Amino acid sequence: MKKIILACAFSISLGAMAQTPCDSGMAGAYPCSNFDLQSNIPVAIFGATSGNDTWGWTDPQDGKEYAIMGVKNGTVFIDISDPVNPVYLGKLDTHTSSSEWRDIKTLGNYALIGSEAAGHGMQIFDLTRLRNVASPPVTFTEDAHYDGFGNSHNIVVNEDSGYAFGVGTNTFSGGPHFVDMTDPLNPVGAGGWSGDGYSHDGQVVTYNGPDSDYTGKEIFIGSNENEVVFVDITDKSNPQHISSVSYNNIGYTHQGWFTEDQAYFITTDELDEVFFGFNLRLIVLDANDLDNPSVHFEYLGPTTASDHNVFVKGDKAYASAYRGGLRVMDVSDIANNNMPEIGFFDTWPADDNASASVGDPGAWGAYPFFESGNIVISNYSDAGGFFLVREQSLSVNDENVQAFSVAPNPAKNVLNFRSNSVPITSIAIYDLNGRLLIDESIDAVTQKTLAIDRLAQGIYIAVVNNIQSIKIAKE
Image 1 (tube, rainbow, N blue to C red):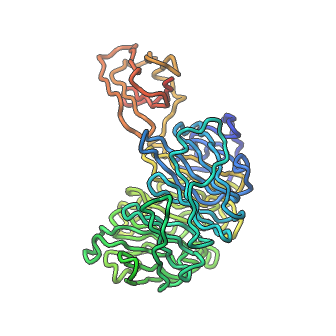
Image 2: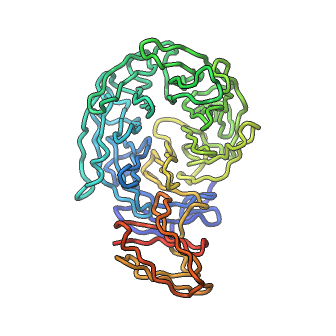
Image 3: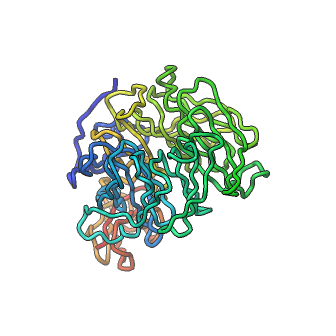
């Protein structure tokens, strides 16, 4: 049984909890390792009783980051450009009725939203509308709608081809339903694939992996309840089954994601922990030969919780694991059957029970693809809701003023840095996406004035002597 400790440091902004470092295995009330809590918003703030999946969008115009989270009665949008003080911008109501299942992907500057709600189809929302929300939170309306299918379990996209794919729909036996999104506000159905039956989830890539037979082909990888299937969908009018692969002790083949070299495919099984008593298990498939994929090895984690979804960014895999929260593994040595857990953030402190039923609490989804390193976790239960976390090696401690201080903060034109101990030898200013904007070497001094008039209004990170990070605000 896990300890539950009341959070001792929080600020109220729309009911949000602000930054709480992971210290001695806890971030306030939440068990953790190597991940700090940036902020948290209970799902009740969104006018909902439960949450579901999550995704994200980075505005190409200014690099601002936005979280998108499904809730039972719609989809909510959150400005996380200041990750410690997120702003709930508003909600897009469900197209038809409420549902426990709602999933979002982005294609360019559009959010594509599907749901298991009957007749829901796919909502299309222009994300550039988030740039200018006068008095949040507001109620948004959809910009377009696709009704070629009714319910869906998930939406899959391929940014390279400009196609979206509904999976688990009421068409094509639940297999991928192709939608041409060349004109996002006028989506066009383009057929589908029923040859492998129902796909619960999927990934579509323009293939650039080790199997040269398929270089440049558009490949669908489906998690199909009791197997993983590979399909060449380059020709939408004539998809071709490539192969399928299964594994031992199947509970429910739920979802999966390629490693970035597309040599291995990591698969989640939602129910094996429940049926067979495993600790959290991920099945790693060797996909070096797409015609003959095979089980490479099985990863067993330290938690008894059930896994749900997994995504890969760089050399790390990020798994949302219901009552086990977010679990993060190093996949840099996956070829040698080595995939150690390197951190976690547990969004359901009460227990790590293996359970994956409708209404089960804990982490449903995670979105790890922001350049800033901030990671969104969506909890099903109201005792959680929206979480934003960050790996400690990347995190900013804006309360650490032991060595250096800065004033005024916020500032308009200049910042005055003062050393409380060692001399100042360098100051660097980064935006929240990690881009270096100012880099100044200094002859050792105890005070330094730095001009920031050329910076746009917003939040930045000042790094002094490469040892202390301070959050600054430019007015």
